[in-house]
Image (cartoon, rainbow, N blue to C red):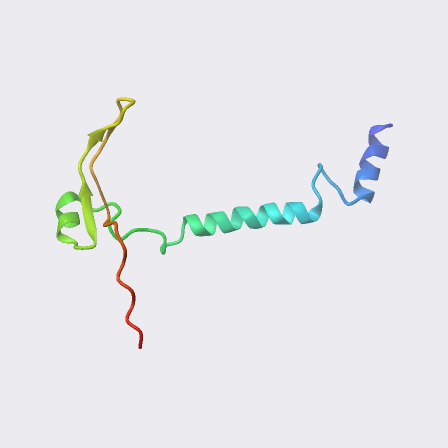
Length: 92
């Protein structure tokens, strides 16, 4: 089969480069949603990036000291949100 007829047959079946328009739209939607969620301020912790003193002053945060992993890599100390259950919001 010649290359031109193969292209025509692929276009006639609604395919271009092996993807249907619905599959391409789904992939685009997935990338857009992933980007939106990854950059959402809701997901960012109020403790992330705080220095040790500021972290220890904030009751919602806890400081994790630096440590060495099994593979020898040293992880610098960092601030994170305290673990445990968050108190339930009061019902009005």
